[in-house]
Image (cartoon, rainbow, N blue to C red; front, side, top):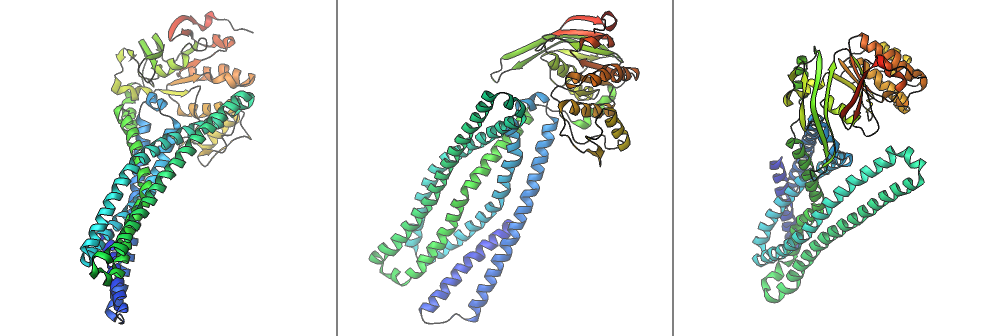
Length: 534
């Protein structure tokens, strides 16, 4: 590709030389011969074909590299620990995967063109030196001054583009608040106005940064104009006074200088795209370094290690302590020590007030969050850090902040009729169907989405089921159906069920009910000790 680009640049420069020779012949009253015509056609064909081929190759190469880059990012993202993912803003990730890679996609073919322009410039300078060494020196001095100005502008330009990238990521997060918080905003006009004002403020900052970047770009373009007219002024006005022999070749020097400055002008005009791509590439590499700094779990390894735990009899949590930490490293919220024993096939309810650490405890119990201290044991054997992926394979969960996939990923072999029968049992007939391997509609109420998530969870058929306030958005019928039908049926199949709940009138269904406070067991009772409340 580089060779083709170099040949295209050389052919482009050769066209300049041929045109100048033709101009000289015409000025002398002569006509170009067949060989000049043939040379012109061949040089143009060589330039066109090589340039086209190199641009197509560069486009194919960069798109392949960007595909690999996106896949690599997604692979690292899926392997990295949940805590690391939670700390990354969605705006940063969306900007990185889509916008920044798009900048690279556009910039790389332009970079190849700039390489061709560099070859064109080099050959043109040789020709300029052949015509006039003083003109070459003027060109070099003018360009050197232009480069100094460019470097000064470039520093500020790059800083502005980096700040603009961060602002655009924050804007994506803000527009996500407007979309995801639609209900809350419409219930509170003050909040509605405040969210909109915050987005408007970010938009204004983005506008200022875009305007500033445009000013930098304009400075670069004007700088190239200053260089051009400085050279033309010296050649056109100064040379005839002090260098008499240049009067005969000035008509060749002027177009040659313009051809020399043309590549520089194009490179300068394209430099904002190169800078933007460079900033984007640095941000991608920074996120990749962030992923690489935290050891992840390979899914294939996790599946292989899961066989160690599938036949478990008990899971024991010993002195688990965990703290949410600020960026400075200080603990913001701590819970534990958690000491808990879970037996296979039991139905366990976890209760407690808001903020008591129930949801965080579930993340610790399933191995999604790394503990600050303490250990997890399966049948009295400690689950080492390198085996945590296999331990997680025990669980199928619906968390309070669950995500509903539109497909049964990992369960593509599930029978369509079986899935639709479960949909009917969950009261979703007429609202959604399972067709061609996906759910037809996810635009449902929260309660209905939870029922659809329950179907997917039941089809996973894992040894341990986790339900975090599943019944909170269900009506009376499905709330009772969940506690008196689904949970007992799972228990009868030998499944272990851990459910966070506030429905005290169903506590008697459980084998045990445990109350947590800041991640510690406050009390424990059997279901038989708790009477069903009216």
